[in-house]
Structures are given as C-alpha cells and as structure tokens.
Image 1 (tube, rainbow, N blue to C red):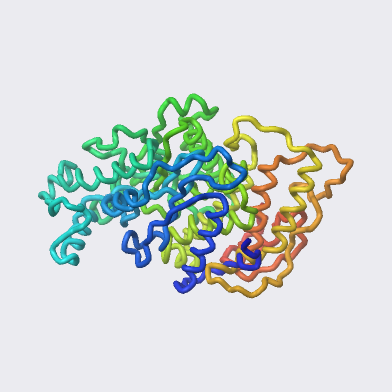
Image 2 (image 1 turned 90 degrees about the vertical axis):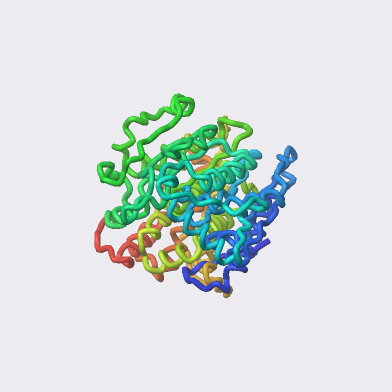
Length: 500
C-alpha cells in the first residue's frame, strides 16, 4: 500500500523524479491489472511518452473472476510500435492507456504531414549510418516529388500509414475520434499535420471515423479570463482556420438524446458533457472494438478526455476498482498528463500558460458529470443512505489526510504534509454542507457522485496548496470556494466572481 503522504505534487521539471513517479504509477496499475511494459528509457521510441509505457493485459484482482485475457503479444506490439511511430505527429504513436471490458482506449496525436514525415525520414536515415530500421527488413523508403506527396499518392505515405493501420488493427481499434477543429494544421502556409478524415487515399475507410471538433488549449485563456466560469463560454466557430465539421455516424447519434446540429451554440460545459456521453456510448456499443482519441499533438485536449473517461469509468467501479480517490487522481495526473506530456506539460504549468487552464478545467469539470446519465452501467441500483454516509465519511477522511499529498510529487517531496485541510471528518451533504444524520430521509447522492466529488475536492485543495494559497473563509463540504477565489487572484485575476 502506498502511503498517502507520498502523494504530494509540486509542479517542477526535475527529471530525477520521473522514475519514482513512474514506479508509483506501475504500483497503482498493478493493483487491478496484469500488465507489460514497453521500454522507452531514453525516449528512443517516443521522446514525449513515458519511459515505461504500460500495456494493460487483463484485470487480475479477486474482484474480477471473469477476466478478459489479452490476445496481444508484447514483442509483436513493440515491433509494430517501432515501425509505425513515424506515421503520427511528433512520433506519438497509437498507445493503449485504459482497459475497459477487454477493450483498449488509446491515445495519440494526429497523422504527420508530408513536411514532418519527409524531414524525419531523412533525419533517421542520416543518423542511422545509411539504414533506417523503421521499415524492418524492407528497403529504404522512396521519397517522391513534392507534388506526389501533397496528393497523398506516395509510397512513403502508403508505408507509414499502412503500419499505423496495422497497429490499430492489432489493438482491435475500430473507432477514431478526432478532436481537431481543422482538417489539416497549417503553419507558414504549409500543411504540417493531417487527419484520417481527410486522407485522400482513404486508407482509414475501414475504421469508423468521428470528427468531434473541440477548441484547443488557447481557447481556455477565455475560461481563465471569465473567472473560471465555463457556463456561457462558447467557441467562435467562424474563425478562418476552423474547417472541420462535426461528423458522427447515425448509429451513435440516434441513441443519444442530443441535437448535434446545435453543437456550435453549445457552451463549454454542454460541449464537453455531450462529447463525453458520446465517447462512453461508443465504448459501450461494441463488445469487441476499441477506441482511439486524439487531437493535434495529443497533449492538451487528448488527456482531457482520456482523464475524464478514466475517472468516469472509475467512479462506476468499471476500471481501477481498488483505487481510492487520492490514488486514481495521482494516477491520472501523473500518467495521463505529466508522463505523456513531458517537458511541455511542466513548462506550461510553471508559466501558467493556457495548457494549465485546460488541465484545471478537466478536474473542476468533474462536478458536471456526477449524474447517472454519464454512467457506463446499464442499470443503476439505489445507494442506501447509511452506505452513502459511510462512503462520504471515508472519502472525506481519505481526502483530509492527503490534501497536500497531490501537491508534491511532480517533484516528489517526501516529508509529511503537515498542513490543515478544509475538508471535514464528518459525513456531510456535498451540496448543502449539512450533516447527514442517521434519521435523515432526504435524497442521497449516488456512489458515483460521492466518488467524483471526493476526487474534485482533493484536487482543488491540493491545487490551491500547490500555488501557495490558503482559504480565507470556511468551506463547508469541501467545496473550497474561498480557495478557488484566492487561486484566481493568485494567477492574475482580479474579478470578484466566486468560482463554484
């Protein structure tokens, strides 16, 4: 059992702490899963991925007798990874990160464009002494003329994207959700990245492609400027670079009570809620096929939805069943955000850039998905009041003992936290702050709601503690409004609106 006092984060960039963080992630994965590791010690597979990339094989706890055995061989998987890594932006290959009912939820970046692909192919060829092991036993790739590359007819694209497709099929991924608001990312007049949805050769035609455009991290500066209020914040879809329409197969839209034609009028809350509903619906609609989620580079919007999926499924008891709120929070921050973002993530956190705002939004947003409408369970059973009281009390004690524990382990300070928490020992209603008496018969929150609120409470308290702020007023039920107001002022806001 990992001590709570070890879960302390501070957002620093010391590489010497990465191995210890990864070790703790492996311990947490190992609580519920049998896993293998793809070694990436010096970034030789991908410089932006963890040094130890976890491949979850099957659930292995006593709670899951009917486990799902993996049909994937780690040696073959690693070979496919090594051969396909050039296909996607920054070498961020398709990587499985969540195992749900035997299906892999994967992340990556979008497809590499001709400029990056051509440049990296030449780089690898030159620095490998005239050979390129990306192709295994195949011959040196032929790079066609520029016009041929732009038309998508090159042998180079056929090879690298063909290997990417082999990896997707090996992982039984059928559904690809693209969060880009562009069809192609253009910089200085050049198409630097592309997308499966606009592959001219239609190499990805056998997959179910969903274009679900979601604003990039730059948009979340507006979230910060509005005192961290997402309600009423609508993305400007009329900007010149926005050319990717929302495209969802009818087989998914007809089963969700959502008017998708109105997506451009949704505020940030409704858009994120509806996209999460869609992703959950996809992974529950097919018992055999997995899902890939990606944006452009795969380190802002992608971890947002990967993290929300992991936490939502955890709240239902569907993944990481043995982990407590502090532990699942540690795992998703450390693995889904920090280790898969590397130096980019740390630098943006330190400088309070827009990546920090989307990171904060992710965990503050948990309050908007506590409803059973977001549950992966097909049928919910009511949670008895006595059990809810017990759960709330237990989660509160868990959070109280680790308020600063999450605030330290991006630099891994190991001394005891020692700080006070605004969370209470008593079982309280998470909205009114009133004690839940044994004789009370008021409607009680579901276990899902209790679990997600507990995670959010720990995050908010730890996040405020990380930036050196203290509550200016009591915060009943751990809502920590005072802490968030202090946080808003601490990062340069001077508004008087309360953040709730």
